[in-house]
Length: 403
Image (cartoon, rainbow, N blue to C red; front, side, top):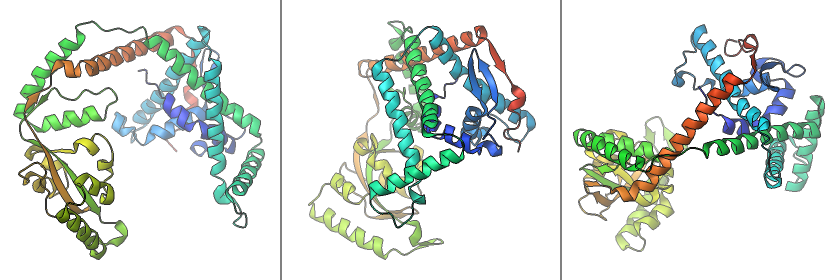
């Protein structure tokens, strides 16, 4: 299986070298010895690389189908991590073999990322600065001194540390550049979008009319996917609502009881504004709402989908109050849930409808092309792994997850 984890590598790049040098990875000492756990051609994969990825994904191993309560399950997960790293490195290896290089502009971005990561690491030392030192510039300067001292104690220097970061970011950029080159070869048939639309529409009509809750599930799934396409068929029974949440803070809770005096005062202000009409509901959301979901698109504009079929998707009392609203623009009286006080506005009664092909054609083409690109890239990686000289030192990774 070929799964790219370049984003993980980039996010962790700032910490890899420094943590490795301090010898704290996976509870074992790597200060002097950072053994090679695999080689892809002449590219080495070190224990520090392996440990970072293993630690990042270990928590999710069970969700990915690995039974980490057994030795067999741990071994399978260990191998998956190693193969994931090999899949990444083989792309870099093939890019170098194809003489792919970064442009001056791309190298400038790499250097920018290196400096940003360095500055981020330095900033973590601000909390260690003596409290007698004041002023942001002075604090940062002292934090950098502390960081440099830590590097020296670990037996390295700023230049060596930055070199490690540079190599990681350069490799990441090379991977992305070559992957885009390969993916650009992928194509889809001219009639692929229409065929996909027709098949999905027929399936959705049958499924959603039988169980309208499936529409909500598929709609949310599409929103949470980078290549998702919203359903083409909308069943009966849905409305869209917006709401203002005056959230009960945890510090005001004592078991199941809440000191509501402060929240009652806020609601009195909202009641006054609603009665006067001085502000629109959207303006009141901006002023009072504590629900982060309502601050993000598409919910900020479109609101939340609600129907009898999905009352259980919301906190008790919310959907029930929303469904009692009769006319677009109506606002519920204040209701209380375990999260706080809510004011709910009906913004649309969603009519059953079929979204026209032309309205979603571009999104479908994007989805199908992306899938074709990923499939092609995955196939190339599998082929490269077969043709590339790869050495795996499995015995050096068997410690992970068993300590």
